[in-house]
Length: 388
Image (cartoon, rainbow, N blue to C red; front, top):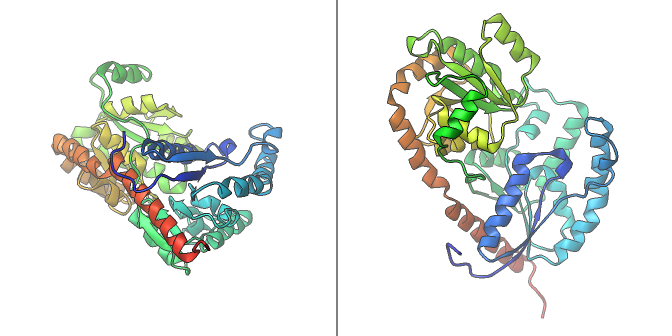
């Protein structure tokens, strides 16, 4: 069922990421767009660079990455050119694939920028995250290709600001926030108990939840430091910590040994269903990121009725709205003090989180995409009028 009136039906070509790279959030984003646009009656095709040469070696072999470049940049362009000819619009779903813009011909095009952290790292903006020679070359190439884009969708105002500072070409950049890309909602009591039982958490055990990978900006050592300080307060003396996502780094393990945090729970690669249960059963979600492009986990936690504790900097402030306790992610002692003072209003945080989610309703998000698609096509028609 269409939730808004579309002025024209379009044939949309979505360029998704190379599947062997297993960038799940980017793959889900492309599928989210496909499903949403098809619901409005549009004809949508999702294409990926083919896994041909890259699939000849086993996962974990360093050669696999380099062979994958052949799939992406040698074999794929011909397929892309052919597919683009039959589309009304081409949408490159990840800015790291900006090179594909040059192979779409005269078909109207746009690209989504999720964050520019890797580009900024390559430019030396983050001394704590040095980039190797090959990485610098790749990110500068991506930035150069982004300068050719006329139309960019940014997933947050923060990312838009970063782009505007980096791109001399001054393309049209429009912010469209993500909506949830999976059915996050409060889990049932049975689902919560099942995930608790997996880690021998008793019914009375309270836990804080963190989810993330090991990039520097996820600040996972910062999470451990905050919990260490929180346990100095009577309210949090026995609170546990569940850290879900990628396997811990040796630095994290060493920190836990040094500070007697042996009861911190490591949960590697949880499923969406398990994450829903973890959010729903947590005392709060602790997300002190230093940088983000958007911050999906904030919305996921709010959707499950989990109070959110996150950083007092964009885009976390932009995404969390009024539904979060805001802390300085780089001052663990001060963060713990704020959390202890504000966690007395848990129910109001839950309600504020649910209210905040209304800003990210999928119908509103898809209407924004539909409007942008129509605008890009109209702009292309004015720039390249069809001769009669």
